[in-house]
Length: 276
Image 1 (tube, one colour):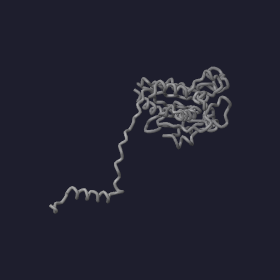
Image 2: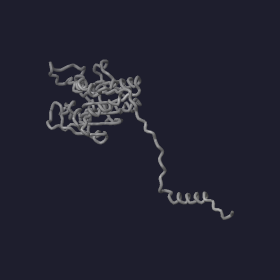
Image 3: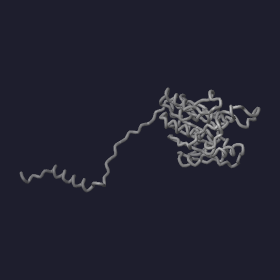
Image 4: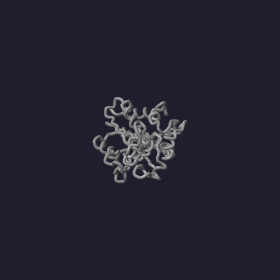
């Protein structure tokens, strides 16, 4: 029986030699990591207007002008858009909620207090509103849309919400954001914007800047004086687009087709359709 060959032993030996030769050439199969999909039960979309959008841009919010002539607001560019189009944007999503703020109401101090000094008791606090909404509905999709100074503060709000472990903003939309200059020089209590350039945290960020084909001094010049914010968004947003519309054309910029034949309004609507 000494001449009997142990076939199993021989096969094991050959397999060992093959493994030695293949060592360093064959990668181990990586473990399967399950993908965790976020399920939202509600959405809260915040719209933030720029200077003189919701409130007059004067100390004490004192109105200037008469009738429809209101040279320093309120203009309600963003407010009117919300009233006229959000029902279409949310479609059949019953749990899609919206709130409209002035840029002053989206800026809070390190203590999370609203810092604007004019009619402070009448102002909303976007940071606290988001925090309280999430306490009631933890699985909430938070989206923020901001125009002009409201675009700068929208990005700042997205940053501090994440820093304070409140939430990570789902969709951030900044429409011709302004603040590079104004954040540094200030105009007393009416300039309630973040001093440092915002570094928002988000799932998707779309930023649009204006390079108008017809310059409107009462809109585009004012935006330029505040300091158009384009350098950081152009290199750090998910999608950056330069439009030929003027600074005041908030609705047109929201509805302009910019990527894959979709507007930012379309993209926001698709996100809200995830809320059933």
